[in-house]
Length: 451
Image 1 (cartoon, rainbow, N blue to C red):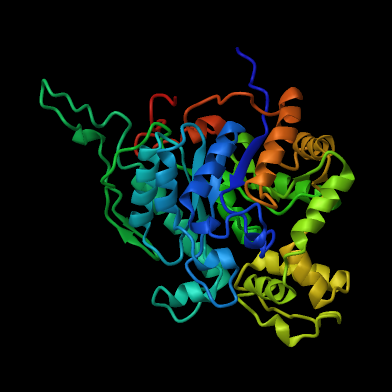
Image 2 (tube, one colour):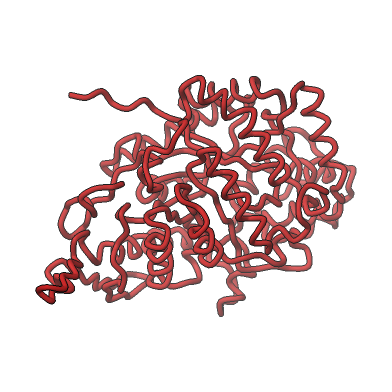
């Protein structure tokens, strides 16, 4: 029996990272049109690929207001942008956000299957339930679905999408010109789904890629969100892991892994990847200076508006900037629930003013501002104590922050033997070390091999 492969750290990067600093577009190192500049996002993707990252991530939402973060006002939708990136990259995974609340499973299944074929097995799906009321109004609804209802819809939606991805077995298309045999219809499966929210016949009119199915990510941190992730997700964008919350991160990690086992899944079948913002300096003083320099572009009014986004654009400007916030009650319960609850909790516990909370939300310093060794030490500790399986890198400035991390921190992680020096596979699923899903009709792996 061969030994199990050593557990390796996984890394993803945001393509455009406006949320860490809502005024990032003003930084001289970032194009002001980064969110719609294809040459820029191509550079980010190729930089991450040179650093041997597992994937890049294209976040998305289908609603804006005058209070939205500048980069959100005009940005590419994921299917188009990631398909274009597939043509100019070779190994790196391409993950995008697609909502389960206000779209059709067949359309999403086909879009992601197309991306998976175009990229030769590098597609991933961040399945979100949409937490902004305006998204509903942009899709013919009067208001946002209640939190638990959104997750019931999401569970059925993801199941339908996966069922459509099972439409064809891996060798269903021989395309034999001599015999004239194009397809083996015995290896086609029709879904015929009739559920609480969706009625979808199928089959999907696209064969599978070499990785079987796109990789599914989920970001819900509530109890309902964790349960959905445990059943359906291959990866979880969990809460931020810092030294202050390392015990909590380990508890979340253990909880999600335990839930996954209820569904017959192994611990390694679901990856926990919190978001961090490393700011690298040769010295601690240099790293602190970079943090302060980037923060000088923040406008407090914009920061307050950004905070409101997590509460379905609640108007926080009605409160005094420099007085402790009042009790916020159940505001945000149907929006970004876990994030909203976190901000309400720290505001109460630390008696934060509106100014302090808004700056904390828009420009958190975190525990990854420091020297390369210090940052690598923190990452390694969280990884080896099973608080995380990897990290989503959210650069303070693109591409400067990403390049610094790759230039100075990645080599240390490689020297310590916890991060790859070369890609193990040509597929996202292969590089993440994830199994090929079993076909619901044949009970066999979707493909006979993964490159």
